[in-house]
Amino acid sequence: MDAHRPLKIGLFGFGVVGEGLYRILQQTPSLKAVIKKVCIKHPGKKRNAPEDLFTTDRDELLNDPEINVIVEVINETEPAFNIVSTALRNGKDVVSASKKMLAEHLSQLLDLQKATGHSILYEAAACASIPVIRNLEEYYDNDLLHSMRAIVNGSTNFILTKMFEEKLDFKQALLLAQQLGFAESDPSLDIEGVDAVNKWTLLLAHAYGIISDPKKIVFTGIQHIQSGDATVAAEKHYEIKLVAQAKKLLNGKVAAFVLPQFVKSDDHLSFVKNEYNGVVIESGFADKQFFYGKGAGSFPTASAVLSDLSALRYQYRYEYKKLYHHAPLELTDDFYIKTYVSFDDWSFIPKEKFEWIEEWHAESDRKYLIGVIAFKELQNHWWRENKTSLILTPEPIIEDVEIRKLKKKSLELAGIS
Image (tube, rainbow, N blue to C red; front, side, top):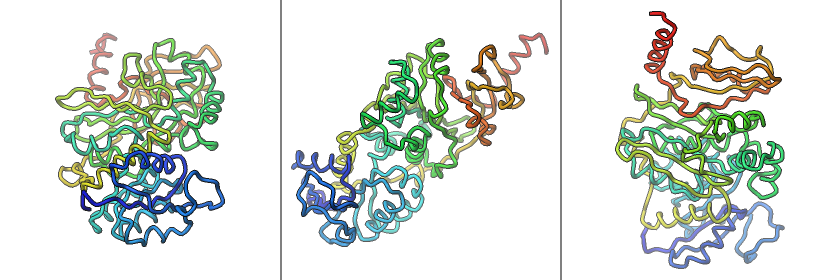
């Protein structure tokens, strides 16, 4: 695409993000990008744009030779994939914000980009206004990228903030999030961690060259967190956040998951409040770097779409350097985690699976323990059932060599050689 050639855009979806992009483009004439047509699902709905801009015929956009970019911001996964794949085959570049579609079809989309020579950009699908994908793609070599930790879902972060700072219970905080537009009427994708793991799947591809089905990444959301867990966290001077984490281990493989976590008050992520997102990247020589910005909303998300449109004017495309130009890394479950588990009944907790238990409280109706367990023991999902709440401790990942040292030290302290 010629850098000086105007962008003629076919837009799918005119909801919060689509309308936000329409407004932003009206205020940025220097970009020389114009929306030629918008495909919508419900033609009778009142919209703040000229009626002749809209159509319900997707082919009007996909087959128009003047339209050189398709922007896709709809909520339905399979229709979104169909739109994107058809656009690429029809010689059009694509910008998408559909994280679920991208995560579930990433491997196919990589093949399509190779086959067609056209680009799909999706900065808005990860952390809305935070330009994290392009930074991972361009700045960090995977040999030097030690770890990433992130809050990537604004809805759950808003709820947790209200639980801690205003002492609301979970249901009250969720209702407030819905009233303010930070959570959907059906919030399950957010609060159960599905949205976060889809975003994390995309970031793993650009950080480490890992192409994974999101269902293969261990995750949960905040649906099982109890008010008592928040009380325990406050007593220990922690906060609770839904944290997506990835760490390169000594064996060269990557530990990755999306789970609730206790966060210390001086942790970068403790400063991420309400609907904001934050990403902490630790690399070999730059130490820690912190990205912070709004993770939801009309203009913040549309601003990321705008950035991708601007990049397309200069023929920018993701090169997937960690996948194609380095040896891509692999996910592993061969490590240990230190975790807090709260529950009502001891009989539902596999105590024998823990390497050791450091702390336990069993006096009240709601009980809890803090202990170390092999990560692979989370695969059977016992911790998602029977009102059990699992929250990782700060710095939860423990490698095998560290386990051996800790066991040796505990034996020495016990007087056993």
